[in-house]
Length: 292
Image (tube, rainbow, N blue to C red; front, side, top):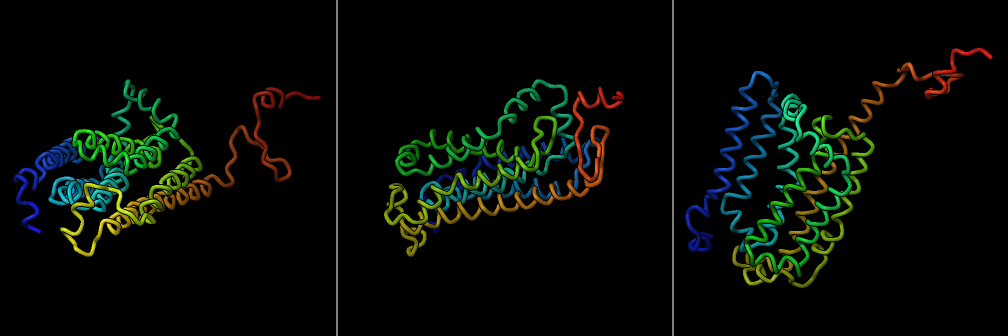
């Protein structure tokens, strides 16, 4: 495998840009969040953050990134899947609620965020639509030869992934306050959106990604161009469905716990008549004291 990297400079092999980004993220998290007395950062949140940063560097900064760019389409699929379905949710989960409340408190960024998250379905369509288009051979073969365009698409994908996972996880109610039912439905339908491209990659019997076809077999002789495409589809679906299944399980669990806590509770706008719960509207409340 060594001779494959002889044409690459040392800063490409170590992923200098990704390394700097990872170091800056760690510096920010340690000094702004961990060392702050205003936030109660748990060990679990710290684990989530450093796991996300390590995974980010492994897929974006090590020689794995070169393999993903030049040799294996399945490596590129794994790279994008880890960033979209593992790193982003872990990063969001690592942020303490107190930090987010202060970050969005009475600030214009809260209004912008609220406007974005008020309509979650367009975000889901945009993320899954762009990811689907990105893997369509006719589109991919064009942008893959232009590094700038591919980088723009990948950055946009990660950004949309972050926004989509924010809707699902909803770490702060300051900018988004969707019900558990809506978020569970959101996860379910989002998982369905990627079915077509995943099935296409799994069942296709001809090589369609020209830049990887010429390099097929250089790393693993048994991994032909077709097998590489099929492996890419399998990795994409596996990571996507695994992450969404975990999210759906968590949402349903928290929804059930909340319903158990609220069971038997009656507020001032609720009356129980012969075992039937009745919600009072404004007219009922005005007239409830009047006698016939």
